Amino acid sequence: MDDTGSQQEPVAIADRLSFQLYAASRAVVGAYRRKLQEFDLTYPQYLAMHALWTNDGQTVTELCSALELDSGTVSPLLTRLEAVGYLLRERVGADGRQVRVFCTELGRELQEKTLPVPVDVASSSGLSDAEYGQLCGLLSTLRAAVRSA
Image (spheres, rainbow, N blue to C red):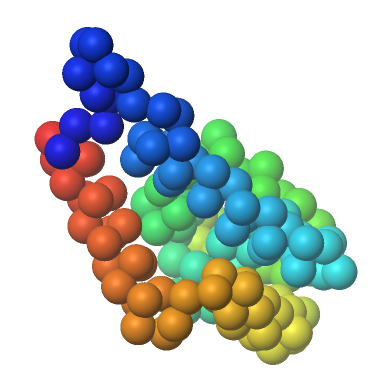
């Protein structure tokens, strides 16, 4: 299961798993970007909001973990989302170093408005529901395996 080919016959770039994953990711994120433009949201901002919609009040550390991003990436994203009124950050704990993130009412309204976005993107994939679910499962397995290798 080597996508690099033998030394005599290298595999064409279009036949490499890494390229297919990269190109598919760019295509899917591009589809989200087009759908999210009307809400003035980037895809990472949408993911952050989605994480809050499913688990409101989590710490910034938990949010970073859920998004698989570092705090240097997540903090500016949260600053912008807070500036437009979608979320609030609240310092907690005795020393105030821990920050929890909460969805506002405006953020909840955004959830309702963006409900069709993932459905539209999934339907544009041309995959059946079963194929889509299978692909998501395979990619999750691949991600876990590569991380643990």
